[in-house]
Each structure stands twice: as structure tokens, then as C-alpha cells.
Image (cartoon, rainbow, N blue to C red; front, side, top):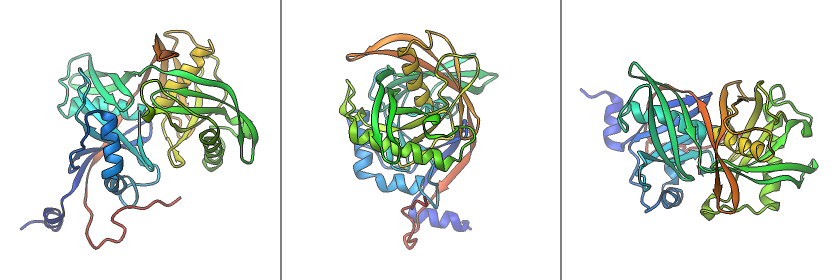
Length: 345
């Protein structure tokens, strides 16, 4: 006799996932049950998912199956030569163009689930993200995957010492950097806050106010594609941008006021690009970045000069460790009034 859940699943269908986290930030990887995502390029696939399958993003990201700060990954066929896997990243408000903690976790996943053959002591995994090809390098010891480092797409300083008028705070000076996604950066001190000690709610409110101001007052552009030219979030830092062997802390608030538990891989990339632009860090100089949310750490360093259109750019290496937390199977019953998901702020 079939178990009750098996009977339900046989009628409704299901979505199966692998659950991971990197530095405390969750990653829900879609294993099966998602419809085919059409598109000749990965950005076209991102648009297709946004315009045609967004009800499924909400189903697996939002409550009651997810939560306000859930993060996800949908594997898609890559269109770039040499890419092993393609991925779309999902969050509480849509689809991002890059995710560093997700890339770190997917490096392990790609090997462990048979997308890439393991070689010791390190296996290269080429991941096509919406922002471009990101190379991950996964430690493999005795057949077990572990710590992962990745090399970013060209990262650059878009603007430095830019004044914006922020509601409730007046004129605020920000930097804007690109690390696969655009972020505004500002020191917590400007708001009388401490990224390690202040209430998360207060940091979220300050970061959201800055994001709203930048979106209204600054026109972003990216040389490769207009789909990349939007502000993903604001990162509140401890202000310690000059190189030191001591960790520097930050907290990223992105999408719809979503809080990254990790130090934010693409944010570390953008922050290093800004520091490199300001000559506060040199090539191959490693820095430790700490999450203001939970204290987890990534390391990062600029490793190669490059360009991105008219911008002087740098390839950044970010290193962290993804961990498995389980597997899940999700369904949606027809008579469930909340089957499509909801958010509680």
C-alpha cells in the first residue's frame, strides 16, 4: 500500500530539492519537477522564468515552504562553451544575476551529483551565471568535496564618493561597485550603527533607504547587457576598507529587504573591486570578510587586472565552504489557499 504522501504526489506532481548553506545563507537547489526554461541565452532564460514561471519561484522561496530570506538555484542548460552547468538564482523578489555563496555551494553540488567528474586535490567547475562564466575550484580529499574558491567575472568600481539624498538621513556618500551584481556601499558609522552589534532591523532600514535613493537618483549601466544594470542591494560595512590582516565586517541587504547571512560573495567581489580601485589592496593580497549577521567568514583577493567595456576591472577570488543540510520534496494541494506562497515582514 502506498504511503499517504506518495498517493498525493502521484496526483499533484512535486518539486524536489537539495538543501545547502554557505556561511549561514541558505541555498535551495531545484533537483527535479521544474518545467523546461526556454531561451537561447542565460539572460533570456532568466526573463522566461520571470515572465512565465514566477509562481513556482514563489512556491519554493516563500512561506510556508520557505521564508522571507530564502535563496534558491535553478539549474539550466548553459550556452557558453566550456560551462559545466548553468544556473538561475532566486530570492524573495525575483532573480539575481550573481550569487557568490550559491556559486561556492554549487561547486560541491556539481561534483557530488555527477555534473563534473572529481579530480584530486582540486576540481574545476565552470558555472554559467546570468552575469557570465564563473570558475569554481573545489577541494577534493579522499573523494570528499570541501572548501571552494571562485574567480569572478570582471568586477569594477562604478562610482566612488557619490552623494545621494536619503530619506530620513539627508545627504549620504556612497560607493557603487559591480561584482556580478551592483551594490551600494556605505559605512554603518554614517547611521550611528555597528554591523556586528546593532539590531538587524536598524541596519535593514538604513540599507533599504540607501537602496531606494540610489535607484531613484543614479542611472546604472553595464557594458555587456542592460539586464545587468540594476542595483541589487546595499552593503553596510564597518568602514575598514584599507587592507589589514584583521577581518572586516559587512551586512548585505538585497532584493526586497532580504538579509544575507553570509559575508556575500558577490558583495565581497564588488567591495574588493572598489578597494583595488582606491589602491587600498594590491593584487593577490588576501583579506578576510566577516558577516555582520552571524560571524561567518569568506576570504577574498584581487587576482588579475582586466577590463569591462570602458571600465578598468579586476578578477576577484572569493573562498568559502558550502555545507549540505538535507533534501526536500514540495507539493501544492489544489484546495490550499496559501499554496502559492506569502511573505511576512
